[in-house]
Length: 365
Image 1 (cartoon, rainbow, N blue to C red):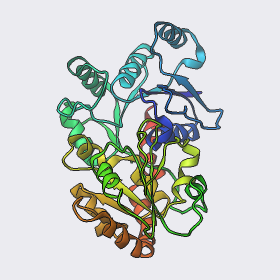
Image 2: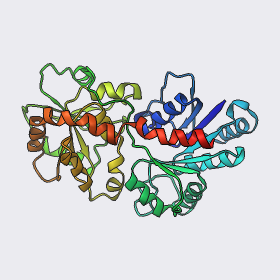
Image 3: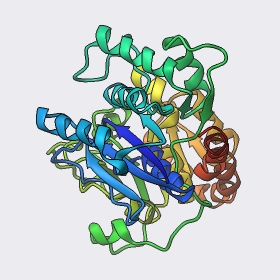
């Protein structure tokens, strides 16, 4: 029986499709899947409702590590066929398991550890970056979330021209469709029929904070704005007179249902932030918005102009009045929605991109 180990040193696994879809697609391809993740009081553990997928805590304490390595060495149902890991601690543990069990290693580049950015907490950049580079070069392949991101990673991690990689977007599987849902209307007891403008992310991002401040004087608009954080600690404690704040983390099986209750969505990454500029295009919210047929307002990375040129959204430079941008997007909503399905299918549908990795695993493992 084929077994896959997924080592994700992340505490928000259930909020990102690059993790959950990988586990589900591997299970559908005949693997028993063990997913290791971090826990914290702000995020619920991932739930799959699938006996083929087991979920474990990432081994951190001395006792947990002893138990983990005992199972890796002596237990038959912890003998894996392939290991996947995220940088830095995840890929390093996956690397050690792969070496111990003499199995292939695949590097999941959900983030790029760049010493210039230094937005990763709890790592030693000199020591851990060397480990990251070593593990990435040892891996038989890399999963990158975009082509541009891989080219950057190739440079940062000194990968060879022959290193195998697969671009698989951080997005859901399945066709783009808007579910029948009143999730946010029910949560906030919204009785009117005004459209909902949805933002998923942290209030600490520059453009999100800008909208948060600029809308404090808003009174009765023809729409509602909802800010939703994937973690209970992302939205702060400040009340807002216009924006409705949602801080209850959504499990993966509710994400599409919740998103579908909105009408348009905000993609807020600022080009003045190196971390946001590097990671913005691969944010999981983008594919999920489009999966649920939501036109996007995207600012202000230059590459986001692609949404406007393909008529699935509106580009926002971060300077123009946000009320005008929202009003414009809502007026064009029906036209934009007609183009989302084909755009999503070509650029985001996880299943379409997983096929090449599946064939590679079937041939080489």
